[in-house]
Every structure is written in C-alpha cells, then in structure tokens.
Length: 372
Image 1 (cartoon, rainbow, N blue to C red):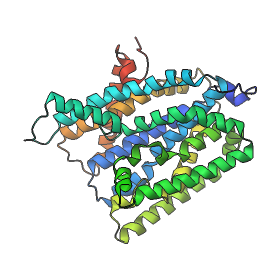
Image 2 (spheres, helix red, strand yellow; image 1 turned 90 degrees about the vertical axis):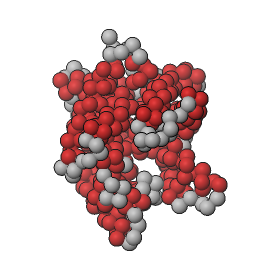
Image 3 (cartoon, rainbow, N blue to C red; image 1 turned 135 degrees about the vertical axis):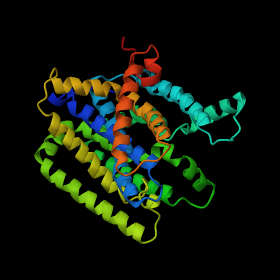
Image 4 (cartoon, helix red, strand yellow; image 1 turned 180 degrees about the vertical axis):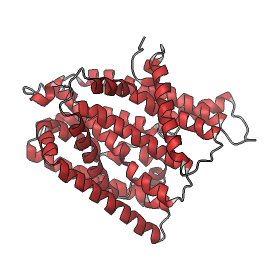
C-alpha cells in the first residue's frame, strides 16, 4: 500500500501540459531514429551521428514513466494490487496483440525463396517473441515498461520514506549501477553471461535503471524542479548545445580512430549517459516553457490532447507504416528523400492510430478504450 501523502502543492493539483508535449517530442524523435536506421546504410557516418543524438528517446520515455507514475501516486495512492491491475493490462494487451501482428509481418516479408513456417513453428516463434520482445525492433520497450510497473510501487514507497539526503544517495547509486550495466552491455564478458547480455540485456530494466529514478525524484520535488527549470532555461539551452557538440566530437574521434560508426553511436556506451541526462532536461525545459500559461480549454491544449491520446498507437504502428513506405520505394531513399519518408511515416502513423482508436478493439491495439 502506498501511504497517504501530505497535502499536495499547487503543481500537483493541475494538469501538467508539459508532460504531453514532452511525450510527443519524444515520439517524433523515435520515428526519426527509426527512419534513419531503416533507410540508410549501417556504416553511414552522418546517419549514425544523428541516431546517436536521437537515441535519447528510450531514456526519455523511462524518465517520463517514472515521473508520471510518481505524480499520480502522490495524488491518488492505491494498493499495489490495484496499481498492477490497472496499469499492466494497458501495456500487456497491446504488447501481445502487436507481437502477433509483427510476427506475421516477419513471415510475410521473409526473403524470396524462404520456406514458409508451419502453424506450429509460427506459434513457437510468437511465443518466443512475446517472452523476449523480439517481434519487431521497438516492442522491447513495452517489455521493459512492464518490468518497471512490477517494481514501481516498491520504488516510490521507498523514495517517499527517505529524507532529501537519502534521495541523493539513491540517485548516485542508480547512476553507478547505470554506468556499470552500460559498460557490461558495451563490452560484455566472454562467457555465457556475456552472451546473455548481448542477446537480452537491452530488454531488461537494469539497462535503464537510472532514468525512472530521475523521473520519480523529479515528481517528488516537482515545485523545486519547475522553478529551477524556468529560472535557468537559457543556461539549460546552452548546456544542450554544448552537449551536442561534445557528443558529436567524441563520436567523430571514435570513428576516425577506427571504430565502426554503428558501434561509436552505441546506445549503451557509458559516455552517452551524460548526453541522455542533458537531453532529457532540455526536452522537459522546452516542454515546460512552451506550455507555461496554457488554458485547459485552449486550442493548443485541444490539439495536444488529440495527439497525446493517439501517441501510444502511433508508437505501436509506425514501424508498420515505415516498412510499407520502404516497400513502395523498393528501399531506395536519397538523402533528400529522408525528410519525405519521415513526414510520410508521421502522417501515416497518425492516420492508422486514429482509425484504431475508433475500432471496438482499440483497447487491445492502442491501450485506450474504444472511442465511438
């Protein structure tokens, strides 16, 4: 049971518009990194340099998840069983549904001449994909989210019982664990444990442990965080620019030193942790500054609410749209065509998500109830 909170400050009694904008900006980056990785050669230096910056998306999402769950737990405490009963189906059901969809898509897009699997073989593949998050390249995120849901009640209960100095200790501890795990994932040991990390480490919660902790602590100290962000917004903007320059410079140095571009842009290189933290702070700052003073019923708020309502469906469907567009152009996309491919993926994903929201199976495919 999450204990009853003290009276909520003003920031806990209003809708956080910045959260919806933060989510949409992150989804926009998700589509961007997937367009680059799918439409450019694996050894393209410029593409990998861009992907390195855009790979902040998974860290941003886990930070946002920790933030939102903690914010809601402070406002509406509930038993652990109720939390799991409410939250887990909203992710687990779409995860299983789209695992089936993308497993079938993998069969449909197999190389010409490849034998078609039997029904029994395909059922085995679907089951393995469900356990490992491997039906398509983005579904592992839902698997990690489910793991976070399982441990979140203990995380927020523990953080609320600690004094402020204890929060610092937890943050430093999470940072140390993140560095160690990232190093293991970057240079795994040459044994069975290392082979396991290579195959499954990216789909396990310890690979992202720092970020939900950062989000939870930000929600616990929300008034102070918002005040600091608004006060230092220009300094944060400068920090983001500086971090981009340093991150890309380190990438170029690594590539010129003989490291393959895809390896130099690796998500789990310990040096990228600093960029991820700065980028998440920058995204939140941009979102907070942009939405400051918005009225709940204003036009901008309504547009944002529409997009936010469909954001999960967009995330789930966009690889399907991207694969379809790449099939139409036979996989050949020029540098100038990347922008058109990105725009087409965004528009197509929004349309697909909108249609899915209006179907009786909306809850299973978008995690949202049927919108008649």
